[in-house]
Length: 294
Image 1: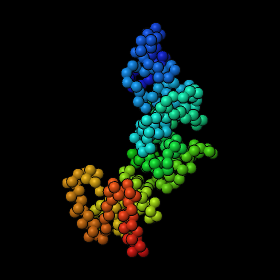
Image 2 (image 1 turned 180 degrees about the vertical axis):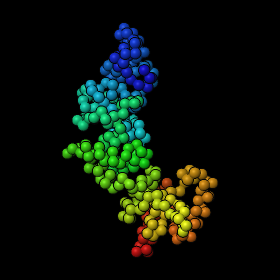
Image 3 (image 1 turned 180 degrees about the horizontal axis):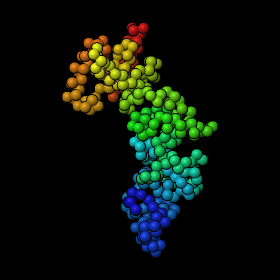
Image 4 (image 1 turned 30 degrees about the vertical axis):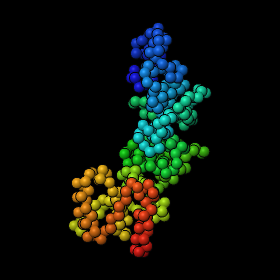
């Protein structure tokens, strides 16, 4: 039994301990009850992950870490670690500090990964999270999950359709998010790029092209900027020494930008502070360029 995981008396007996030995460990404080019939080894209090594993053991039926806690396990936007969320078909009517239980009729073992702690798979996690996240945060989580191949677009869309019963919270929002994406469309390669894309859309500007490939007259790949408006030959890139691989690479990129200028391209730059303020100056410059090209 691993220290970070909870266990039941049946688990202990299956490991070869006798009932008397289990009782002794409980009475002497070597084992501490987390929930009724569920224990942990003496030591520090369990974190959100450990509490989730214990709650899943305590459920009267199948259960899994879900919603924002599952997002935390997958390291996706919208994650929450100070409170643990689980899903289960049924739960004993008792409240526990730091634990949120979602009872669901749409339970399927195919939605759960049990290789470590029970946790809903990425597709089900995003569907559940749609009920508790703001749309902008949900978009970040969806794009990040797709970008990292945690879930395929077709798989996510199929599961959304299967769980689209009337009245399910958040399903309409998630469908709207997915409808703005196409299975073959390029995805933003970072959360920063997603935020930049969103800032342009919020400013009423046309949707740009992500990861557009610019080639020279010989057909050689010259650049693949983060975001581009090919019609007016404007490329937008996020500037950061760390993001672009350090100062040496940053300096090499200057030569590439000169080549882009020679081909008639204009390169605009955006930084972290720009994104935090909604990229107002960038959007103003883009709007002016689009008007001039009209």
